[in-house]
Length: 196
Picture 1 (tube, rainbow, N blue to C red):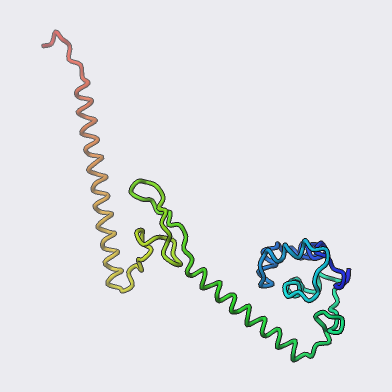
Picture 2: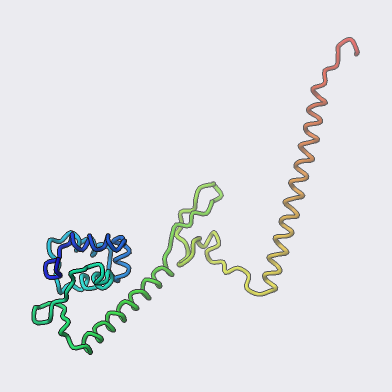
């Protein structure tokens, strides 16, 4: 296999030999997964293709044992390029990749998902969450939580009071259930007719 005649099947074989999925290779190369799939289905690869060059760089020459880079006169990416031009091109690619990663991080920070909190009807909430959060504005998506020591102390005190109230209600319900059970048992006592 030489780089001049490499096929999509050869590229797929090299990717699998490296133990990478299409998604992982695309992420490492800074391209889309569909670009990897597209080039793996091709009968012959375009030597001057930007995505192809990125995939080869991400796979590494060790996974393409017969790899050779054609020179500039052959019409491909060449080893005969001046080092300064190649370094400038690689620096530009790195800048573009950094910008892409930054845009992706901003997109994830603004992403809105379905809230899914339990509503009063018992169904999951279908509203979109606040940007970058998991809940909508009705179910805590706008909440920042306590930030000051005083605010945190208030939260702790409110939770303590809530637990005390909850435990008191549980104990009261248990006592009422015992009384109801005792009354039910007393009502079930059968008095013989001749004792009256």
